[in-house]
Length: 279
Image (cartoon, rainbow, N blue to C red; front, side, top):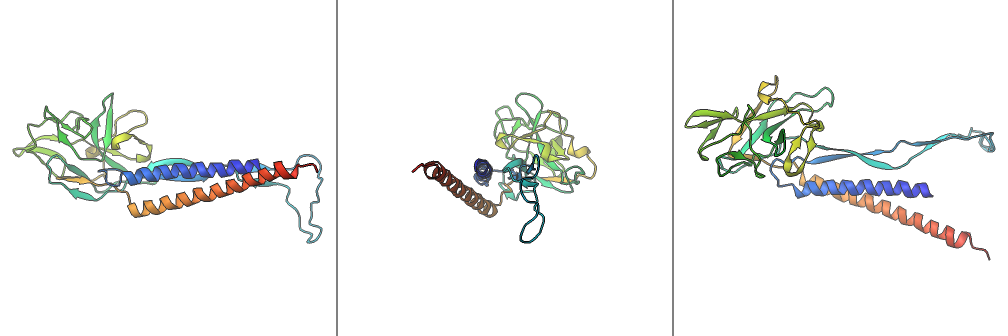
């Protein structure tokens, strides 16, 4: 009975966390460059039960004659094992602003370890140390003319340096080169992650590596192709209809576990108040 409480409670906790994840996806359905999170719910290892000491129960069914199993397993609940971002391309949205730049995925090799395609990111200067990465190309120019993201982080070029411009009268080519008066002054920093599942997802659409090392440049990685599109931003890849359906499913599953928990509670109440009563 008490094991049943734990099993049902683990299911409710898993569905609650899944609901929070899906709710966050819905809230960012219109956030540029946002990548939807995905969760995996798994079962805890089954608990094996075996008989100790000499057998005190029959090993065969007295009616059918079939052997009775004395060793079996019992489920111990479920848990949400991991959360990873879905790195598919979002739809491009035209803004007409020169400071808005979108990454367009081309050929991205499949990682042998994860079995998933790699991912491309803009390079940003992290406020503390190292680099941060993002797909949100909603950039702007600060008071000093440096190209920054919406949070004020500096956009880096392929050499890891800040990009400074006089004004927003510049052009970005398909290969990421930045031109002022038809003269190339910089090349947008674009990094490639062979296994994006290893990246740490942070607030404001930022990613960082687990050990703080820098990702390799996408320009120097073989078999990787991409393009940049000025005047566009990449929208979120959240499928609102699918996410809403999954959200309702998670809610109904939580509700079903809640009713089972109430049934267990009523059974315990009867066991305490009625079964043990002495007339």
